[in-house]
Length: 345
Image 1 (tube, rainbow, N blue to C red):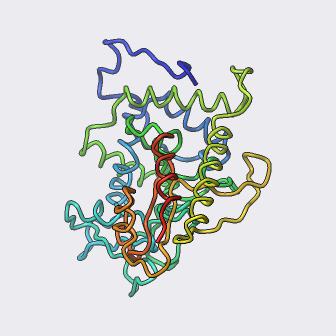
Image 2: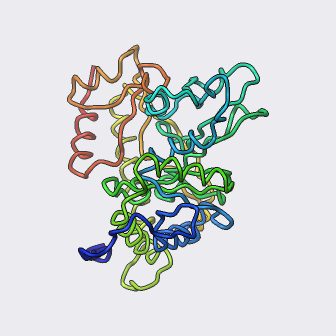
């Protein structure tokens, strides 16, 4: 995209803590709000009407803010936080990091017992295996946080407008700009949004204005490409370009897995994508690779061939699974495919 997303921030800008004093999230930049709503409307992946937007330093801070907002403040015991296996590997450590008296990690959602209140984390598409997820506990006294970081057209067909009480997104997975450290929550309940804002106020006294302004410009450029506005010389939108790149990488990975005969991958069925206007196949951000042939420690096995992965044990699964990033730089991904293709027993 060249320099189309370049912005200039003068030294006198962004000096105040405040951005929009009339908003519940008083440190939310109006331009960022505008571009978030515009992008979701362009892609058609989430409802923004009648939703409060809370900005955070990445979705990690928003996840912590959501736990704070949804936990009963006067409960005798910390509320249980659960997610179905395989779950995002950082959920347990983030939840228990501060040893909060409000909430605690309780593991696999499928094994939750009793009738006490709970918070369920639903990541869809899921990290690490790319599957489409729904809540599994589904009983009274529970609340659900929907982590939709990967619900973008380059990773999965957009089959519907996500319409949940609390949805988390992050620019790191939407466009790849992880270093900006910007995420946002779409929140239906006003009081939940207020409590989340209070957590971020106490935690970091707001969120960087410079990061919000840069993120807003990037999202604006992406929306322009989606709407085919402003850049008539472009032959495809940002997401169609990224979808083509992800499809190529997955094809190469499946070829390498087929050649080795030592591994297997999940299979994904095509679905009708509202954004693309055609049937598309999921191409997740991570590959959930399984070692076959009695290999029980897949991470250590691949390390022997100079391939770094993350063991399935971090995701609540078995050690014969590993998570492999599909988002690295081209030269690194090329090296990974070459090394994987050459593994023989």
